[in-house]
Length: 284
Image (cartoon, rainbow, N blue to C red; front, side, top):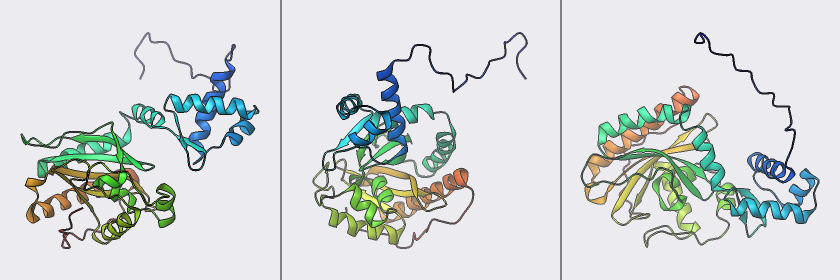
């Protein structure tokens, strides 16, 4: 019911073009749409789609890279969506379903374990922290909401990478050398593959002093009905509070949280393994 006296809003006609179009702006926006539709764009692709010279396409792409809306794969000379697109996307859905569904689930998990919990999504070689709640302990892990970190350096990222087929992992990491944040970070693709195999068997990922000294985490992927990892949930704490009894409690709490988020987003279906009896003492 509309309040009395309030004028009815008319829906803008999407097909109506501006009276005074700005060609360069229109071209840049069309490139942004292309970046969101395909995995990679080349200068020749943009030139063909826009009907412009390759030199013009290159200048437009360079400006989008400069502003963070695109990033260039130097090895392949192609262009992919940049971090600014993702940040704008999450700004747009800040009050929509994913975070609305995730927030109470994270609150429930934090209440069970009183440690910092995070929700993150994949972004190429990195992850993006979408939501989180801090522990109430005086000594605690701080929030990273809004940050990007290398996927191989955190439990959340490894939980997401473990759900990828081998060819997709190789596409993301074409070389053996991986980015590192601490001396304990996984620095080679071979070492990462070995650990991902263990994660698949256990059903959860661990990290210890890989992104920050003295900090550990346990993470579980949130899979859709096609078993594609769309997000991951983690518990993070100072390493001094890790022990086998707490590990079991924390793993159970975040696996339960991941299952509930899956059910909220895609319906109730059985996709997560919960092998909590096979706790790993492996130090990453």
